[in-house]
Amino acid sequence: MTVRDRLVLTIGAIALLLLLPAGYSVLRLHDVTDIASVQRKEHGEAYRAVGSLQARLSELEGLLRSFVVLKDDPNMRSQIHAALATADDGIETLRAASDVYEAQAAVTTAKIDTIRTHAAEIEGLLGEDQAEAATDYLSANVTPLFDRTRGSVLSIYERIDSVSNADLQRALDISQSAASSTLLALLICLTLAFALGAWTTRAITKPVMRLRSAMARVADGEFQVPESLPYDRRDEIGSVSRSFRAMTHRLADLDRLRAEFMSISTHELKTPINVISGYAELMQERVYGDLTDKQAEALHSIRDQAHVLSQLVNQLLDISRLEAGGLRLHMQELPVRGLVQRVVRSFEGLALKKNIDFVVELDDALPETISGDADRLADQVLGNLLSNALKFTPEGGRITVGARPVEGGVSIRVQDTGPGIAADQLPYIFDKFYQVGDQARSKGAGLGLAIAHEVIVAHGGFITAESEPGHGTRFEILLPSSPAQAAAAEPAEQPIAHAS
Image (cartoon, rainbow, N blue to C red; front, top):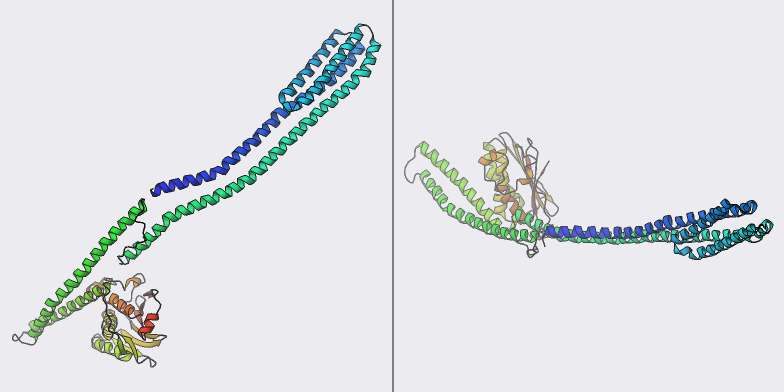
């Protein structure tokens, strides 16, 4: 299943989960709507029918009384029959409204039939010209019957109210039940939707995060293929993981070939460089005859450039060993003061030649010795730092070399009054082949600080740099006093450069 299909299915499932409580609410609302329709249609029709029936009864009673007074009036007789027919229609309308009123309708029908019989009896008495008897009959039989009939009509009203109230209560119960059930269903569906979304998010983002972490390690130069990537997945993430694995293997092969080429080529370069230096030295010593001044000057330049080439080849060799994990330290107890003074003596002549004030500040509380590789610390660390300081410090400037004790070791600093380093370049000065400024291209290959950093790290220490453009640069090295303290040092990455 592709990531796109997974996302589409997840969105569809979440939408379905959210539609379920909505669908349930619609069904319950439909039930309430049905009850409201019954209220409006059946009970409303019943109310109107009973109201009409009640009006017809009052009209019929008045017509019978008028009929007795007016005696045998043909118009009155037809109005009485019409009122009785209208009352019958009201009963039929009540029956048609709902069958729940059948019992009350039957009772009322019986009473209307009785009224019809009494009306016929009164009509007969009036036909026989017995008005007084008709009046007595009306008072004795018909009037009480109308009262009883009105009571039946009132009972129909009560029945309608009872049924209507029951329906309203049922609607209320449905609405309350629907509200609580819908809320509960919504909470459950939201929980399931969030769980499904979280599961899908985790299924997608977790391998992506692992892949990103692996890519970051490759970008840092660690060409190791992690086993935790989802190579077996059949989606885009699996495809990217497999491509990344193939790319990493290819980069590892290329890096190995590059390291082998650098190692072989630098070894091969050392031989002709040594031959050039050797013959130049022999010629300067007049082994092959006398030299003119111009020839001597040319040989001196040849020896200088051969020396530069030799240093560059040695740096390339050191870098290749560092990358291959082959940096070996010859650890021994070495005097701190002697280490600093040894390096200072090597550069005092150059400082004097450039008219640079060379200051050495050694704290009286310095320990006698520390554990380290004397040659690498002197040549590849302090030598590189002082060489850079002399390159970039202008004539009349100042270089300070200092050492002081710190907790667990010794701090050595090299500070100059050169042009300084821009804040945006400072974090990269310990990267291989990185050089500050355009002028630096003609003064080195950008390997010295990278080698110095690796040597210090191999000793269990760290190196930092502070600089302010126009006010010089300050490097500080922290070296542990002993290998045990180096092993106990925190393995966390130390900050290597920052602007002052």
